[in-house]
Every structure is written in C-alpha cells, then in structure tokens.
Image (cartoon, rainbow, N blue to C red; front, side, top):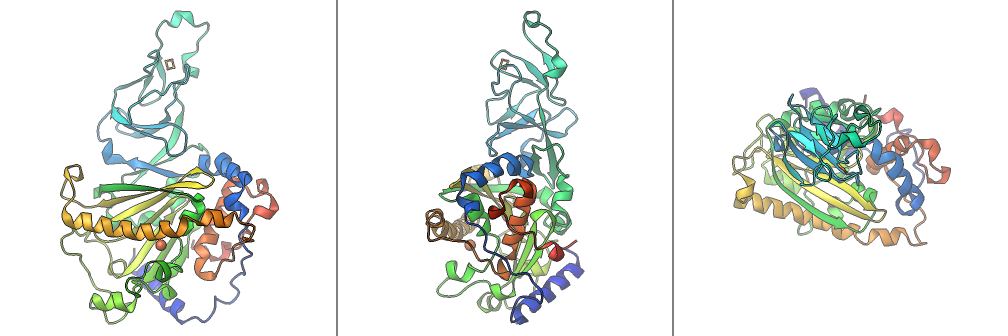
Length: 417
Ligand code: FES
Ligand SMILES: [Fe+2]
C-alpha cells in the first residue's frame, strides 16, 4: 500500500466515525430477494454461469516446483489437474481422458512426465495436452489425434497463488483482482508458505457464508470477549473495487489499541508479534487495524504482518457450503513435522472466531426458507455485500435472472477506479 493510500484510508475511517448518516445521495437499497439463497432457479443460474466463469484459487505454486509435478483440484465440482510443464509453466487441464472419460490422473498429487490415462494408456503431453499416443491406434477408424487433446483451462499465478477459470473468454486474473495485487505486494506472497489448512461444512448457502466476512456490523455482537469488542465497526471503511472485489479496513477498539500502547485508533505503530516471523514490509496501518481484501467470488483474506488466512467458500449444494481457511506465513519450520506451540495457539484462536461465525450461520438457511423471511434490508455499512451481489448478477448475465430475483445495479458511482 502506498503512503497515499494509507492516508486516504485513515481519512476515510475518520469520516466514517464522524458521519451521522450515509453520505448524501447514497442509494437506498431494496431488499435482497431471499430466493437468491433458497431457490433451485438461482442455484442453477450460478452453477451454469457464475462458477464456470469465475477465477478461483486452486493451490500454491511451490507445491509443484518441478517439471511434471501435479495436483488435482475438484472444488468446482469438475475434475481439474494442475501440472508444471517442461517449460516450467503451470497449466491447468480438465482431468478427463478424451477416450472414455476416465480421470487421467487418479492420485491427488504426484509427478509425471507424460499424462497417461490408466484405463487404456492414452497419453497426453504435459505442456500442450496433445494426445501423443494411443495403443492399438489401427483399430480406430479415422481417429484424428489432434482433435482429442486434453482440454485446457485458463490458469494464472499471482504471488505463487494459482487461480483457474474455466471460461477462456474471461478477463485476465490480473485485471480481475486489479489494485489488490499492488496493495498486497507488501505481504511478499511469493515467499510465504502454507502453515495449515482447516475446513468446516456449514449447512447454508455459500453466499450466506461469504457475506459474514464482508461486513463487521456483526463483529461486536458475535465476537466480543468479556463484553469487549476488539474492533470498532463504526469506523470501518470499505473500498468497493471493480468486478465485485473489495477492501475493508476497520479501526481497533479502544481496548485493543490501548493494549498496543496506541493513544488513539490512528496512532499506528510498527507492532511486531513476538515469536512470529515478521513480514517487515507490511505498513503500520495494517499492523494496527483489521484489514481484509475480498476477491470475487469466494475468497476473503484478513491480512496481517505475521501471516494470514485465505478463507474460501465452496458450494456443495444450494444449502451446504464447505469453508476452508488456509494460513500462509513466512515460516522457518516444516508444518508436516508439527506446528510450534505459538502457531498452534494462534490457529486455535482463529478457529474459535470461525466457530462463532459457523454457530451463527448454521441455522440461517432454515430461517431464510421460512415464510417469515420476506427480504433482506442492507445498510450502508453492509455495502460490500451489495457490491458482491451486483457482480453475481453481472456474471450470470442480468437478463438471464428473473426480475424479481435481481439486485439493482446501483454502486457503479462508488467503485474505486
Ligand atoms: S478412458 Fe482413458 S485411455 Fe481409455
Ligand atoms: Fe464474524
């Protein structure tokens, strides 16, 4: 983050504290139609148009360092494989043999210089996906091998995080995440390593789970400790970014900033957490606030100078979601050999906060499906949620969505460009 951006965000937080109403002219949101979370129709639109056109995280580049290293990725409900080619590029292919549809690789990770299907040994080149050999080829009439390549999927790497997108016509990952790549460069993503991945299945729609991480309006009501909130949501500033992405910076509460020796919420200090490797380049505002980025559709990251999680939301069905949270940090130990006590304590503490969110979400789907639920009024402080829903509609295609299920496109004038 540039000093200019840090200044601007700090001024915006002061503005949020001082205001007595939403800014003049800020639109009144209509209720979000509840059927967006409950109807088969909306679920099917998302399955058909949203997920197959979205950039989603599939893994980390350092997990496949050598030629032929691969891992599979099934979280979109479509078998995909990611492999490092002979030219050291990471590529993604559908893991579906073009003969009779067996998976080309069956292990979740491994190394292979040739992608050979185990059923009848059709073999594909790891760089191009070209079909290079077919046993008993004489027995196929007019088999054109050039027409039977393993289909590729768009794949892009940002600071070692590998993303895939099934839509060949999608905008690039760099364009999708826009300024977030620059703003997060100080976290040195390339030198981070995976500390631990945890998961939980929650019985509600994936958007209910994502929304809980797009606002801090709930924070002091769900996550207080001994009646004290660690954050002051009244000062939260929200950057609505293009393509449904966003940023949120929330000042610490008096309890939190006093504990750090700060005189006021914006008396930022170069706070370093003892016992953890520090990412020295992280600015002091981030160290003394809660700062998070949202990458549409299903990734939220609350960043920190000593490592941080990527939280992702994977729909299983209309009313079931798997939430993963994977911590990345500049570590000097091998997590496969166990975690140091301070890291274990940190992960346990984070899991506790997640449990508070899960406890809150778990009964929500049933409640949303109740005839009592007529619609969701959204406030100014929840505007990242509206921004997110607008992009859901744009990606699906507004005209494909029945009018009564849409959200109005209102926030274009408020998007940072
Ligand atoms: S299904 Fe793969 S070679 Fe037959
Ligand atoms: Fe929460």
